[in-house]
Amino acid sequence: MKRRILCYGDSNTWGFNAMNEKVYGQRFPEDVRWTGRLQTILGDGWTIIEEGLCGRTTVFDDPLRDGLNGLKYLIPCLASHKPLDYMIIMLGSNDCKARFCALPKNIADGLQRLIVTAKQADVWKNEPAVLIVAPPPIEEGSDIHPIGRDMGPCSKKSEMLAEEFKLWAEADGCDFLDAASFARMNQYDYMHMDVESHAKLAEKVADILREKVR
Image (cartoon, rainbow, N blue to C red):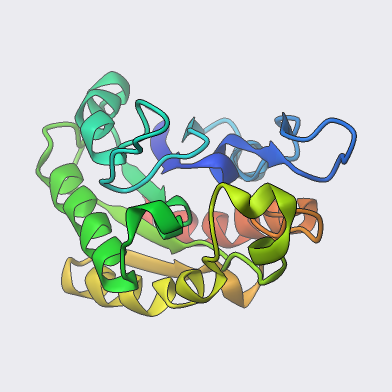
């Protein structure tokens, strides 16, 4: 049976393309998105399941848009795709929105609820296995960009997520990857990964999967 990997994330897993100023918000093609590239790198022995949703949070209900609470959808999502060998969670950027009034520690605690819920679910082929990816920080340009009006100033907060995420990943026995060490947001809206970063993320995750999933 193929090794089944669930990628649970937000617009950067969905593949939000902010690079085209004339048509903002289109989706990168499958062979550009990090999940699609990951499938290509790993080949036929793997099934990469792309579960990205624009605006998804860890645990927060958005008062302006329904259905974005990542915790509420997690169990149905896991059950839909079982059996699973491994899960990748890359969330947190949307939790930085000013309207949630969440500290970096609060966001990390929300992530930890996802970890616990996922690990306790009856969906695993063997032992539960989770990789936490801290997304590249939202850049300062977003704080003053017209598109950033919905988010509010959140670049400083997003810079602090990786340290908090790593603490919970270690405490809960998860693998951890800080995407800021090799990836960045694009230079148009400053809050979505550029093409090169999608490629680099796919390569880094592929290395981890080859080591961790047998």
